[in-house]
Length: 147
Image (cartoon, rainbow, N blue to C red; front, side, top):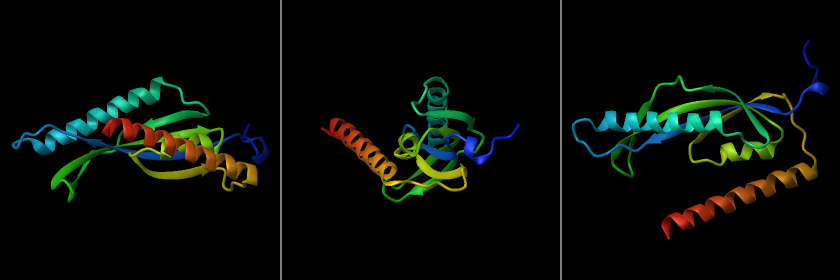
């Protein structure tokens, strides 16, 4: 029995995260080391997503099948590898999705369901406040890391 629009709950999205590989310096195998580091980072995060629940969100599917890719980083003047991970998530609210898109690894989000989202002023206030809280937390982490 399929659910009609009034019976649906939550927001269904696909979120793409690309995990950066930070390999060790080895001039002969530099590219492979960064690719392996990206794969290792993705596997570590995959285990976390599978084993640690996220309040307000349910990870329905995890796709780690995309190939690792490399790009040239002009800032570091070196090749950098990225390992993509695609999460299919059912979230209770937009606020629950912010923790996924406020990550450095975030690349893309695709809303699968519902086709339309209507927000009243209270919804907008809650989303904006959650963004503020996440930015404050990220700022605090960065200050502790660099001070």
